[in-house]
Image (cartoon, rainbow, N blue to C red; front, side, top):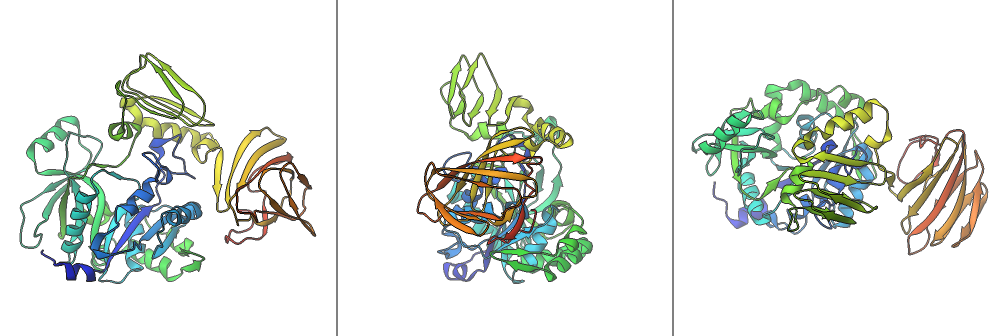
Length: 484
């Protein structure tokens, strides 16, 4: 399909960014409360931010107004990362629970005009050639206007066994410059992958799509009306909370969990594929990151404080401490403030099994880092035992914590940087560097940063119970409920 520039200016294209994943194969950097899409693995910007930034200039638009589907637990981190790159979203829809991509895209399609072309992008991919990506995305959006459902097929450069494949047919009148989809194939064994590569008929399944909202809903109604019905009810019961759209949690909880591939794309007769050769990488493992990273003369990717002796073809990452290696080959070593991963580079897909063990053991390392982000800044747990916990608390300029109290713990605050505005019972006062205060158990209190610089305090908690759920919020500008 040929579309001139004036028509492209009028094309109602809505980027839909899927940002609800957990990225457990990239543990210990990626965790449930701080997953891989928010991490800047390859430079200044996170994978989410790079996903949005590579849309700049498409379809004649001067501003990107994406529709973002995200996890409720990540909402403030998501909004902050959009703000940092100057992106004002059309909508941020919060999923109260994970239900895979078919329901997520139903929420997006139900929230858009039926004729809008949804350009569906996972938030955690790397693409080296932005121009080639934009050209393929433009073709996909133009083609979607014909009423077809477009998937992006990555042109394979090796016999990869970690991806699903798409077999393409001959071009026809319906598909135009794209190719009709003949078959979706599950992750193959090595012999099959080599056969696919040599045939020239197969592409890697990228998980990116383009279709009109109404066309997707029609096919979902045709093949999975149960999913569509649950999502309609969830959207009908939605409420607005600051910058976020909250859908009806009970209705969405009843929705079946299914991928768009299984629910629609493998069943529809209107699927076409647009080939993509743009240096695509789904960043699905540490070895995938090693593949695309800059390396030294010994083939090592090093980040942070790292020293190597007789070490080759390794991925070495230190978040803080000195990491030294001697005589290693083809290993991944990742150090964080509370965990260290050492893995064979050929077996990093099995890191997910470590995360599952941590979950079964009820350990916090699978959920969050020692440093935990909040809408007002972050806290870092410096030391802890059964009776006390020490935290470094950082509050951004102009931000404030909720007005709150605790049932089981008292708190001691010492300002180490900036100026603090403290509410303590009926009192309100400021603290400067080296000044401190004490908050007894049960006393209502709040911490604010009225200054132009970051506020940093050291907080020492004492008590019988020091869990984060011992918070009774009486007032909160971020809409968080009591005890959350």
